[in-house]
Amino acid sequence: MPDLSHEANLRREGFQRIAGIDEAGRGPLAGPVSVAAVVLPEGYKNSVLNDSKVLSEKIRQKIYNEIIEDERIDWASVIVEASEIDRINILKATWLGMRLAFLKLDPSAEIALIDGKPIQGFPADHRALVKGDSLSLSIAAASVIAKVERDQLMREYAEIYPEYGFERHKGYGTKAHLEALKRYGPCPIHRRSFAPVAQEEFDLS
Image 1 (tube, rainbow, N blue to C red):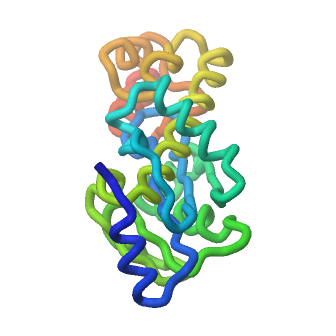
Image 2: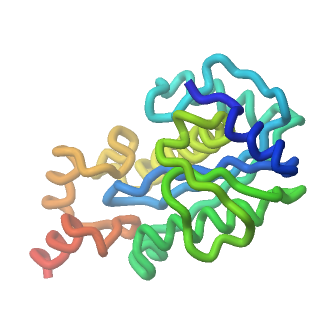
């Protein structure tokens, strides 16, 4: 289970406001990548909070509500649209979202704990943790915010483009999604730089 040991180590180095940053939606064929930054208070406890991928949708929503309603917690979230992902690629789009989410925090943070590997052009000191969402409570909190907000957005897109079933697979390349893509072609939120989408677009041209 994630804890605050990495945050505690940074506090011993003199940092007080430490942001955990994570994303949701790097892999899907459609929709944005969602990024969140969360600053937890010192000594924060939550026995259920974990990497969003191992939590049920119901538990994620419950934790999300607890985080956004807790006045001790500062957080910010950013959406990077599919068109931007196509323009600069998914890795750079994720980095962009992480930079923007960090800068959106008010009051600002001094340092970030980031899930994954170090990112280029980050506006402050940061430490990267591979599988950080299972190690750091701050990163885990960010993973929940990012995931819940992206899932909600994909449910809204499902009402606009009902033929793709976005409410079920959230844009990931499931068999049903690939079949719909083959039948209907890409819609405006599909990532045209991703191979399965590009292939269908080519086939339909």
